[in-house]
Image 1 (tube, one colour):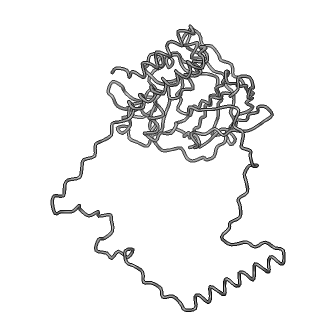
Image 2 (tube, one colour):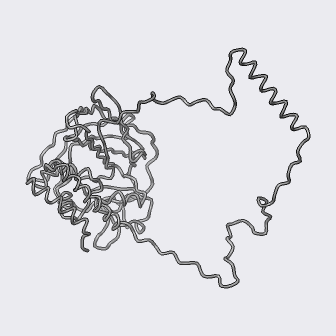
Length: 395
């Protein structure tokens, strides 16, 4: 199938950046925390990244100026729209209702009200007859209010009417607004290990599950199927300062588990479809099964070359500016719970301190254990999901 023109234009800009820099796919991939094969798919137009952040980091690494980055973002926006259009199924046409013919009205709605029942809302309520003593009572009430107001004035107490509510207290001092964060952050919560391997739990039979997507389309696939991360969730947090000179210091990353339940009794679907050079960047490992999970820094590995190279772990603190962003990769695992969790990032800058809550679009992240769950892999030759031979199942 020919590539969309917008996708081809975007891929051409990415290829030009890579050619200008001169580094290999493996070397650039290590700096971007993606595999060499994933970066190659960006350059060839086979895949459009779900977020612009990774492409913007590539532009910064390759020395692109502000104008080039704006043009690159515009091209990515059009390419991303084309990718979403291609991933969305065509709408099913709805047949038109048959013509009832002359003299015949539409069929009554069986779920609507009974047309033979009396419509009480359409009947006019009988008018109440005025009471002769009403003007006298109103006059007496008015006189009483005047007397009370005069008495209150003489005693020095202000009067308060029931129709005038108390003014709400101001949340901030007049003329002052909350200062914006000195940095921006974004997440990608649909990462796959090495860009090619992941497990999702889905509450559907294999025949009702679509083939595995490419990694860049995993978010749309997971949303369509109501999928939950199985066994492990990988979350990448990208933090970038707003100023080129005033650094923001990142001090710590905390894990908060808000709910623990029994692992989901759903089928496990494995997305493995082959990888290029394997790059496992340094990351923070989280054991969600512990009573108080911690984000522990872990070494990464680079197996994209002839020899496996260790990527040393780096602990907090980190410093970020607008020209020097930072990526925090969190690997959260569980075997014994359906866990809902979020992260808190501590920071300081210019005499200010604070904590930012990192969530999945306003909701907690979710990871569920997969032990004992029926597991399936996709047979591309037969075009169907089959039992994973490594799961010990049959059939």
